[in-house]
Length: 69
Image 1 (cartoon, rainbow, N blue to C red):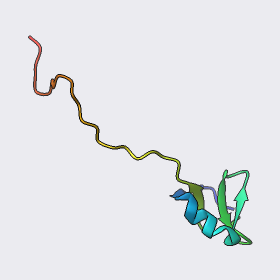
Image 2 (cartoon, helix red, strand yellow; image 1 turned 30 degrees about the vertical axis):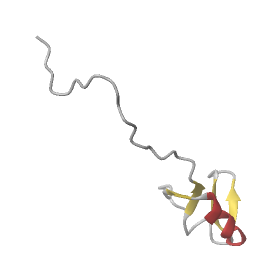
Image 3 (cartoon, one colour; image 1 turned 120 degrees about the horizontal axis):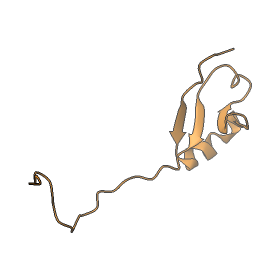
Image 4 (cartoon, rainbow, N blue to C red; image 1 turned 90 degrees about the vertical axis):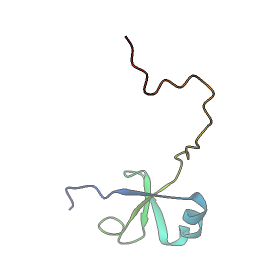
């Protein structure tokens, strides 16, 4: 048994749906793992719910490089 948890890899939901016949959901890991060998080998996959940060234009006062006296 592993003492170090396998890292989670984030995938888009549509790819997880395509791979669904090869994967099963593990409640203890809260992620998808490969059927049959997923307890000991293979990737641990989660749906990518992280938001992509878009650079928004800042209309406020720019204070970079300003020192207070």
